[in-house]
Amino acid sequence: MEEGWSYTKSTSFMIIVLLIFIFILFFVAVFVSGTAVQNKPTPLNPAFTNISSPGVNSQPGSSSNGSFPLTTNCQYYLDEVTCEGNNTSFWSSNFGRCQCNTPFWGVQGRRETYSNSYLAVGNINPEDLSINIIKEENVDRLSFPYSGDVREQSLCTGLCDSLSNCTGVIWEDPVINTQEPVGKCTLIKDKVWVLKGKEIVFNPNIDSNLYLKNGNVPNFNDRAFLFVNTTNENKPLRYWVEQSGVFVVPVNEIMKLNFFPLGGVNGPLTGKFSTRLITDQDDLHEDIYIQHPWTDLTLPQEWRGRDIYCVYYCVYGGKQIDG
Image 1 (tube, rainbow, N blue to C red):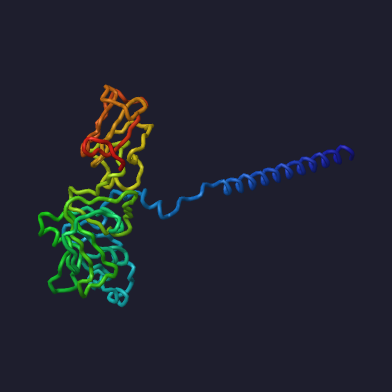
Image 2: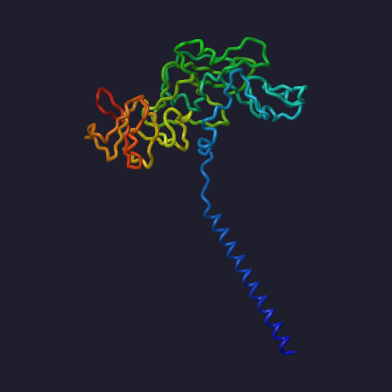
């Protein structure tokens, strides 16, 4: 009898210990989980996360005929009544679903295609640009006529194409109106300059307002762009938009690089590179590389793995000036 009682007592003790152990594990797990939540990094402002998303160098809406076919186009409208009630879509009895009128696309048919002879540069306040304007005119559409209207329609990029000195357009269509020319088309000639400290934003989910003929790009005189993993020949389509693999060098600031740049765009700026700290008294020693304005960057391969310093500056009349 004494032996049986001892066995029961021992078993109860082991169960109590096991329960205490489980309780401790549960408490630790809850504590660690709570700490992890508290220490979770704060997400970036959504206004800035979109510019580094995949698609910053994509070309949504670029077209040769006004069509940008996607299975989701105008699928926001699930029945004939709502579909026909939208002025950029029509109901297809053959397919039994809503479809977008050219040149519109997107889930709600609120986006507009543009000629693939142009680059959608991004969005910027026109007041943040230095441009030479040929003329401003109200037109019907950006690049392609609205298929729901048989009348002759005026096109913004079409006007630009008719002028040999036109390099691009600024397109403002605050309200999609398919019945009258309400879009404001600004025709640009010569180079487009972005004012000091201003930025061009590109979001693949929003139509651009600045379009340049292929071969033209926005220009900057307050910054240069270095490419981490690619040469100038394969540079990002929109290297001026914040993204991984592109390092921005402000004018007149000496920078120490932690990478070997494979290429770079300097525009009107002169770049000076060296494997030693750069001073204003530097002459053209063998460890000084000069990137002249409007030229590609090709640093000596033997500089790989070494500290590299660089500075970009403006030169006018043979003298260095502030940007």
